[in-house]
Image 1: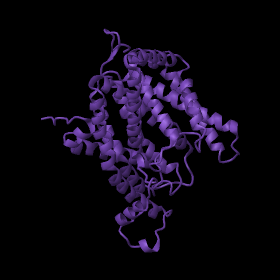
Image 2 (image 1 turned 120 degrees about the vertical axis):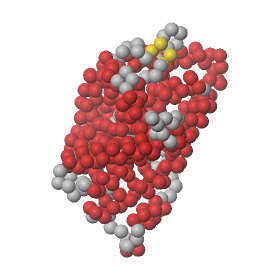
Image 3 (image 1 turned 90 degrees about the horizontal axis):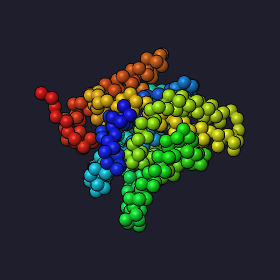
Image 4 (image 1 turned 30 degrees about the vertical axis):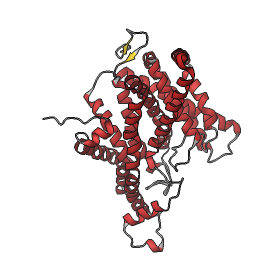
Length: 408
């Protein structure tokens, strides 16, 4: 496994296709389906389309844990594949590709997705009773109610819903490419030597056992200034949330330099068990401190401990789960390849489907049955739509950069 994806015949390692990272990126996105399916049992009515006044503590912990690393992992992989693409094709083709597959996707999908989310969201509010329409909206079509509520949004408080990650990814790419251009322009002929020194320092820091602590220390001062001492989804509008921009940008840069020192991918698998177990422990501490906010006064010490615990959860989970996938999924698999291809489409369209099924099963007695139905039905619907409407069409070419040839 250790050298299956590294070629070191030249002075700088060349990374071949790493199937493990394709699978890891797909899993980070597909975990979003499970994550959103649990929010109806964690968030209050009104904060979610179908909420609850009695949150499930196990699901609340699962939400807390997965939210602490899922999108950070995605941004790390975005940085890794950015370095791979720029090394292979150059900056301009990379930016052209990102414009089409991130910028245009965000612009085209944002409002249709918001409308599709709004329809079951309003229906869920009416069904469960947390939403009361004003008299002038009584008898109005559900679609008109949803569009009317969207029209009430004003800049910059226009929510991009769960597509916020495309907005932040586009910003981070532009900032990173601009900073890279300026640094290369200023350094000139010294750029290669400077990059080699930075890559060497990066390897020294992150090849050791204290790597998660370095990352956590970088995040802690930003997390301590957030309302809950953890990084919440920056989905409230287009005004920048600086902790999110810094932390997601940090992991994008981490992924970039990981590509420059791919030998680290042979180290993480040796430590994945310890790192994952420690991430669960750190998350449990942070979750306990989160619960204490509701029953006790938050002290300065608690703020810093909770912020560091959340940062440590993120770094341990990102490195641990990366090691897990490199260890067990480095061989090519048609199933993992298919999930990697479909995950982008599935993530874009899944939330309206999730909320619709949550509304449908909201009066069922069994929470377990509800979750099983919501997740299984959502994956069936979204993957089927990918297979028949996207994979072999121009939409697949647009989203994935290639159109698959239909067998037979």
